[in-house]
Structures are given as structure tokens and as C-alpha cells.
Image 1 (cartoon, rainbow, N blue to C red):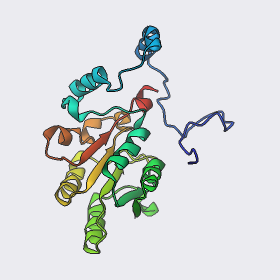
Image 2 (image 1 turned 90 degrees about the vertical axis):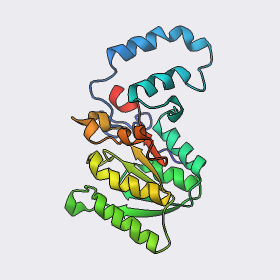
Image 3 (image 1 turned 90 degrees about the horizontal axis):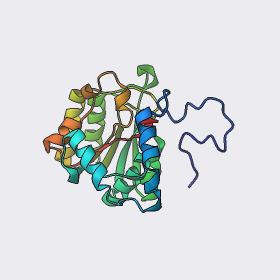
Image 4 (image 1 turned 135 degrees about the horizontal axis):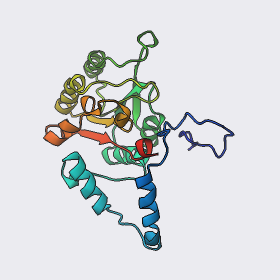
Length: 219
């Protein structure tokens, strides 16, 4: 598979890299110190179950540890979700993050698209997306999985949590796995207004996956 992820400064001669969207302030001092302090642990294998990390993340997000899965970056989790669920048909927003499509194609999944409109500055209208989903179901093409990046990469637009709840309810009712990618959400001024972590915490939505990452905010 051709490497198409951002941040490839090794085969591209660039002075300023805007493709990976990392925190421009760089690595926080506390993270740097943690790396240095962990140097003596490099001679042993890491815990493949990430038990200590999952416990910390579960406490931070106020969810059960069994609801936390750690991976080698969000990209690995995207591929793992698709491999675990084995969807036959998927709906993707366009433009959005490239690796949703790559993971789905690798699993032989059929794809359909909901195109954002240039005349609307590529902002997502949830009512229009819901109408599209209902139309697809009526035509016998209900997707098994939906990927939604919030804030969206590369457009940067974010949808508020209250707007997303009807979409989550529809997906839950119709058996559609909804993967909400929140890897950039901490860059927002009020991330809690946009995150659906509260919905995951409630236990109402059994088909909801939320993607988070250390990469972006912590560089």
C-alpha cells in the first residue's frame, strides 16, 4: 500500500510541514521528562494490554477500562475497527481523512460518499447527512459503518455535540457502527461542546467508537 499519511518529511524536501497538523508549540516539557524517565524500561517488552495506560485514560474520561482500546496511533485503530466489524458497505464524508477509505478498501468493503459542498465552505449539515442515510436505506444501500471526523480533517469545521445526537440515535437504531474521530478536538476552545464522550459514557450507544490521539495535541 502506498504511504500517504502526512508528516513524511523523509522522502519530501520541505521547510514547513502543514500535512500532519501537530501542536506548533512542540513536545510539552512534562512529556519529554516522562520519556527520559522511562529510558531504563526500554530493555523489556511493553505491556501489550496497556493496562496502566487504559486505567489512567478510563479515569480521565470517566468510562470503564474495558471501553478503552490502545493502539499504535489512531490509524492502527481505524484498521482494527474495520477488521473486527468486517462491514460490507460504508459511508464516508468527502473531503475527510484518507485512511478511513484505505482501511475499508483493504477489507473489501463497498464505499458510498456524502460530499460536502464548496459553496457551504465544506461544512457538514447533519440533517442533510441523515436524509442521505435514510435515502440510502430506502434504496437498499444502508451502510454498516460510518466514519465522521470532528473537527474534520482537512476542512477544520466542527459539529456541536447536540447536533450529532440525532445521528448517533439513528445509527444505534439501524445497527450502523458510528466511528467519531476526535483526534483534533482538544484544539477547540470548548471541546466539551463538540465531543460525544458523554454519549459513550452514558452507555446508550453500543455502536459508537471514539478515536483519540496523543499525537496532535502533545506533538
